[in-house]
Length: 187
Image (cartoon, rainbow, N blue to C red; front, side, top):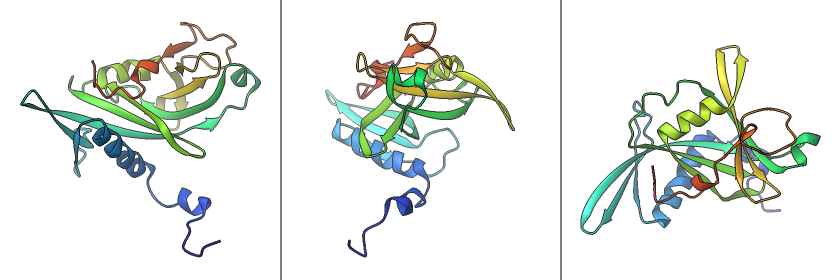
């Protein structure tokens, strides 16, 4: 084994995952026709500004980037329907008053590396999804624990609205597949 190669456990300690997510998002947006610029002062929840030109008209879009790891599903009720899931805590009001022009790019990386799982949500849709997630009491108050999982039956992605369910339906999940690789930035 090469001495210069970074071992997996060293990579896991290497830095803030949000930086990895932002880097992946920049490449993805660039590959899909946008010119991404980084913001270094994150006071307005803006990590990237995307510049695009269509029919001679220039437009700018603001993006907040979030990063999450995908984990193999483990519980019996999970593996009946899903193979991978990612979870993350969000404040219930985190995206409540954001601009209608802000998008949230949620980059999910599986255990073997990034595999194109980037979800691009209008911030107001993301706010609704946060509030459809499982509310949990934490040391810092109530937060939403957002699970997004890949379904083995229909190759779709779902947000879990409940914990320990056996059937994928509108009472237990929200289908978020349309936001996977949503580079048209549709609202």
